[in-house]
Image 1: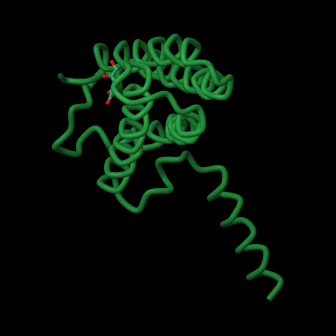
Image 2: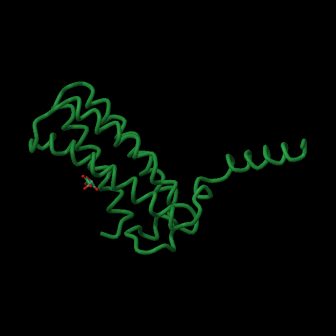
Length: 151
Ligand code: ASC
């Protein structure tokens, strides 16, 4: 019993210490996960864009709710680019994601920072602030797509 308990503890510790990629049952799951997170992020980012671009009326509460989801989603996709996930197709992910990992990570971190600012801007109840933060976040999306996405 004691041995079983310490084995279970060791297994739990190993799981916690493992890279995020090891938390997916198979590489295909990691790819679905990252694509799902990016898809959900784009849906909610688009709703903020509709306000920032005047296609729908500005609503600070809705902007904040959308920005909360964007900021939370922005943290997730990167765990889905682990070892072995570069072999899964179809994908628009460029090989440079795996050959220039430090640069990719910088882009990921920039997005997390910018989406945090977007959320803060939404909470100020100012459409002007939202427009500025939306533009800056969109540029951050685009810079990473230009470097690391096939189209
Ligand atoms: C979006 C969306 C993206 C980004 C990007 C910004 O709404 O789906 O991928 O903005 O187009 O340049």
